[in-house]
Image (cartoon, rainbow, N blue to C red; front, side):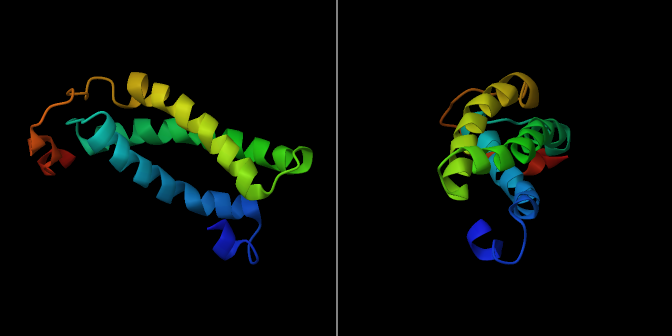
Length: 118
């Protein structure tokens, strides 16, 4: 989004616009691939989003500092931040977002049905 919108919008606005897209994308991956959760989406998604709200606030505060202090482009600065968020958010999701919804790894594909959305 920065590449497409960066000439028209400040980078922090682009970050705010990208956040919901990123959270929903990450949620699908964590829910179905990493944790194989069967809990209702409406119960998990708010907890999941809260983990990323913390990351968003930290990103909004630290990205301007990184841009001024580090000799990298905004793309490299953000990639470094995403690496840290990825590692930290896994723990947040394991112990907060998906606690109780983890069903383990099995060959059963019935965990991918959409009947548990509500």
